[in-house]
Length: 512
Image (tube, rainbow, N blue to C red):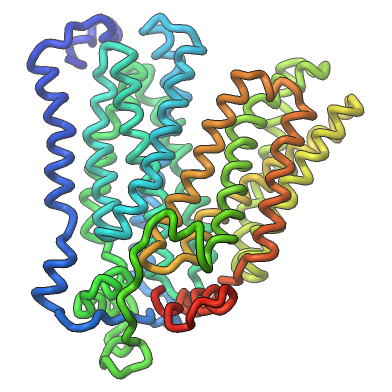
């Protein structure tokens, strides 16, 4: 049907959705559900059949140097993250063509972004639970299957059907990102975990946006905006193909009561010496972990950190998807013409570019929690500066460039560290759920920001800056008081600190 539109510029609006097309569309979610059923391992059956004894908990050989297997995993996860970021990044590039073809207003087209953002929020939480129940690898491959299925967005003749499929696309995209961080945190040595996690996010995100822009430049003139949705098919297949290089987390396998499978993965990444004997220091017998869930994150030893990260994620979403989007408009209201405002943002973004390297260095060499708190505080300070500029009606371009560059630098640093830090602080049976919840909070902030935009809150620069600066400052305070250092430390040691600090029995510390 897409090829039938080649004589009309690949426009499909108004095409009849005949019976074969409707049946085919119904088969896509059915096929995804059946594939998911076959993909998800029956952990309880495997444990009962192969290992009826008490499960073993492995301490990964954190002292080994990075080897070819580690780098292979890093490259594969960078590709997966780039593909993941490509999906929502194409939204901005499909809007113009979609608006023209469906003859809808820009406001109506904006609903698509809101629906996609809602999908990523739901997907982050849902996929996090799936990863903790069935495994990290299974959750990543399920996301790839969803990418393939939702590629049919490119053939939808009506805007309403695009909304439905875009929600599912957002759900799959929102699920992959936190799980990739979770798998990385549980696989690489402790000495390199922090900087690799932050670099993974920075490189994967940048590559995804570059892929979206390059694809739009190359494909849209030839095949219309629809080609950007159809990219889900080949890119999803790429992740499926690379799945052979994505191992299951050894910590997940050990926690699930499959020690032999965990030993095999550890030997692959750390050498046989690290898992040679059950009496070795690399192996510790642990009790069955308690049932996990979102509520478990909001109580007990992780409650204060979780609330701090959630508040930070919500405030970051408000800043990124609300304040920064409305900043050119607000600058125009202060007397700056549109061209000058866009040029100011471009110069500020250029000044903020070296921030990624600074974030990686601070997270790896100084302190993970202090670096995160520092950038959260800097974001709150930058927003407060904008509030002062608005109240005092400051017209200095230098002051505006400085404030904008500081906000872009600090906000990009916050999101670069937020999910990696979450992937380090939760126990293995809650790590996927925790990472997904924190990722979801940043998207939920965007949804709230969209609502505030409709209400006109972001039309008032001082009010909106203060509204976001306050929760940012609260998050910095919460994490400054409750945050735990993760730099260069084993995940088990981090859990021991959290358990001791909350009065939780030390025996629970090993469930990481």
